[in-house]
Length: 201
Ligand SMILES: N[C@@H](CCC(=O)N[C@@H](CS)C(=O)NCC(=O)O)C(=O)O
Image (cartoon, rainbow, N blue to C red; front, side, top):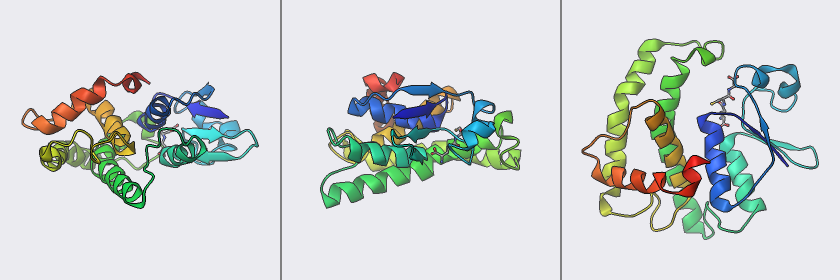
């Protein structure tokens, strides 16, 4: 297997996931906006995006969350996406909530401001600003949800929902647009996540 990697939120999601599962895949380091847009790489991912996972038989999985799904089944030790029907549904629900409400708020802000994405989307800086302003209320929502004092986003066990949360938290730290002081439950969760060895993956 080969993992096409770069410094980005979507690749970070997979790196954290692999570190949590103890899976080590050889990496191909890519430069965003350059290697990712080459004709050679577009034969691996027609969208010119990382991450991508090339399997030994030549098949390729792209899309970070699909890669995590593949890895959770291919390496069934320490499952992060649940085993029972309830756990699978619950973890999928929380992962989706964190992805669409938190990660994508940062993601859309970034896509509509960074020059890297100027050729990729028709950037609307005012829209980016609405996303930036929405960030505190998104964390407040998670804080309220976690006021039942559960240690992890989907309950008592670390799961892919926390990996999604860590990916959003990484963007929060990188852009200095973090969790409001008043969100004590979310901040406690974030402090615990920053202490995990996978945080630096
Ligand atoms: N939905 C995809 C999104 C991947 C994506 O947007 N990757 C960006 C970096 S965050 C990329 O590779 N961009 C390359 C470029 O713009 O040249 C996933 O989850 O993997």
